[in-house]
Structures are given as structure tokens and as C-alpha cells.
Image (cartoon, rainbow, N blue to C red; front, side):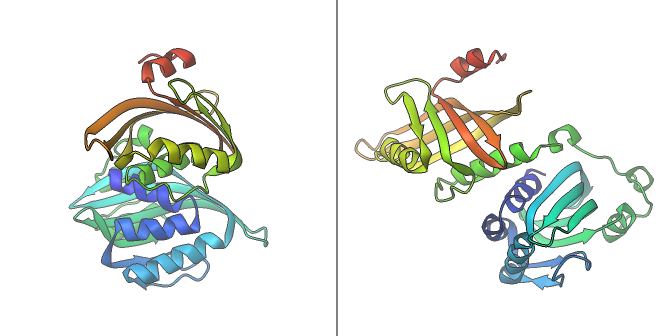
Amino acid sequence: MEVVRRWLEFWNTSPEQARSGVARFFDADADYYPVPKFPEARTCHGLDEIAQFFVGFMGAWSRYEYAIRQLVEAGDDRVLVCGRVHAEGQGSGLILEGDLYYCMWLRHSRFFRLEDHLTMKGALHALGFEGETLEEAGLRAAGVADSLTSPSLHLVRSIYADWEQGDLSRVDWADPEIEYVVAEGPEAGVYSGLVEVARHVRGVLSDMADWRNAAEEYRELDDGRIFVVDRLTGRGRSTGLQGEAVGARVFEISAGRVTKLVIYSDRYHALADLGLEG
């Protein structure tokens, strides 16, 4: 189920992120059957065709959001995703809004078949069930509360999907004038703008090899900020010693980009500053 969430976070952000997500989450011989009404819709086979379709599709919209309502485990590595799409055409002003169902078949934690459907009945039939509702098909949604995530939370999860792989190459999530605050420690201070932030991060990681930063907990705060507890691991280049540290980050997001990021080396200090319980 987690691989489904992570894929949706990937392709719900940008065309190039969708391309990266196809390579990461799809089987080399995968098939994709998009809704025929979608722009340039066609059956796709293999990573190149699927990636090409997603990149072209995402590029057709100035805004595209898919809000997950339900995730349903249908057995035998089959998953049904029930959600609602809202999109605005690039230049055309076309509005696309309505229910959209994804039928997903997995093999070795990768998608080998993906189908889009506009009705619950059609999606259930594709998965081998009869009926027009989950109840009629004998299915039950799992983890619905965890699936109802905002675009801001989707964005932060997509950032960590890269950081978990030690990948800092993508910066399209950051506002060009981002405010990067290191709340404590020897590097404490405020760094403004992508150039200054990149210089600081490179300096911090310069003596660290094989670094990874994995999220352990996400919380969406009442004011829309995203609080994350994470675990940074790596190996010292000069010492060869392995190390790890559990800290926290607070993301402020506006218009789909992170405008402020506050870094804590101690998660309990972050919790105290935010008035949260651990």
C-alpha cells in the first residue's frame, strides 16, 4: 500500500518527477490504460511509453491535483485507489474535475498494470468484482484517514522520497527566495535564497558519504505547516564511521512551493517550540 501512496505523490507534483517515478515504481514490461477521454490518451507499454505519456499529460495542465479518498486492498497484490481530480488547462483554461479510480496490479512491489476508470463499477469490474460499491463487492477501504492528504503533505512526502535515496538534485519544490532556518547547533542561522541554501547544505554534507534522510513521522499542523520527524544517516569521509541523528523539520508552503524550512537537530526542541506533544 505504501508504494501506491509514494507513486501518487511522485506523479502528482511535476512532469519530470512523474518520469522519475515511472522508472522507480513500474515494472519494465508494465502496461498502462488511461481514460480514453484524457488528452492524447492511448495504451502504453513499457517504461518509455508510460513515462512519455505522463510527462505530456502533466505538461498539459497548469495545475493538477489528485486527492486520494480511499485506498482498497483487493487481494493478490491488487489495489484500488478512489479519488477526485481537479485540473486547469495550460493556456486553455479548461477545467477538469471529477472522480477518478486507479486499478493497480503489483509484482515484486512494482506496477505491472495500471488502469484508469471514471466509475466505481468499472474499476471494480476490472479488478474482477461485481457491484457498484465497495460494500456490494465485499471490499473495505484501508487506511482512509492516512490517505486523505493535502497537496502540501503530498509535496513534502515527494521531497523525502528523493532524500531517502540520497538525492538532492531536485529543487523545484523550493521557492527561489526560500528562507532556510537552522534553529540550533554550530551552523545555527538564517539562509535566504536557493544559492545561499545550496552552499550551506553542500558544506554540511561535504564530509558525509552515503547520506540518507528518511521521514519517520508526518504531521499536518492547523496552520497548514508540515512537521516531520526524520532520521539522517551517513558515513564520515575522513573517519569512515557510520552515524545517525534524529531531528525534525517544519515546512511552510505557499502556492505549491516551500517558502520556509526550519531545521531542528533535536526533535524534542521542535515539539516544544510548536507546542506539540511527542
